[in-house]
Image 1: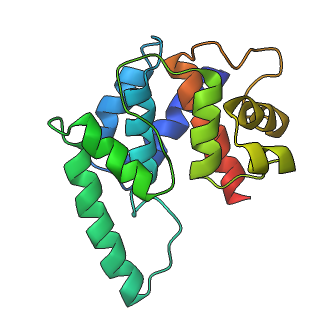
Image 2 (image 1 turned 120 degrees about the horizontal axis):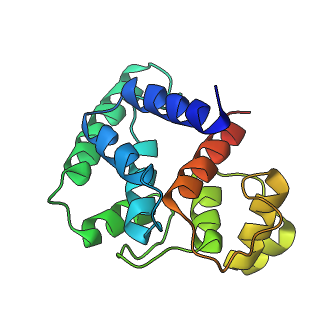
Image 3 (image 1 turned 60 degrees about the vertical axis):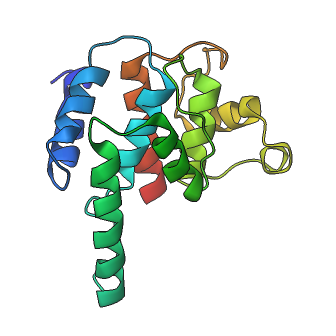
Length: 172
């Protein structure tokens, strides 16, 4: 099985284990290989907050919180959700991003996934918070190839691949 088929298989399996039918829509869109937008990245980040796909414990308090979060996520993932609601949802979780239909660069996406998965970052990144520093840290972690510029727009396939690598790193 080729590397791309393995990634697709992994994505379909991981999203189908605890997500709604909507996840199939975003995966199908991302696998088309177009230039990714900020809205694509935001929607993918929302799926990562699905309480049934993370490693939360099964205590009564956590179940109640997960049910509340799941209803919020389901509302936001519906087709009639505004970009402002998506931005507010992410901001509450420490990810400040203005959701739009503009192309997203590798550096912008690096900053969002490094924050989402709370991955290790350098001292300078912590102090300055520049997207270019987040991108450099993400390259060192192996999320992005070292021969690519952070100012380049990212394709939807690369966006999905980087997301999966970051998610796997966060579990280690």
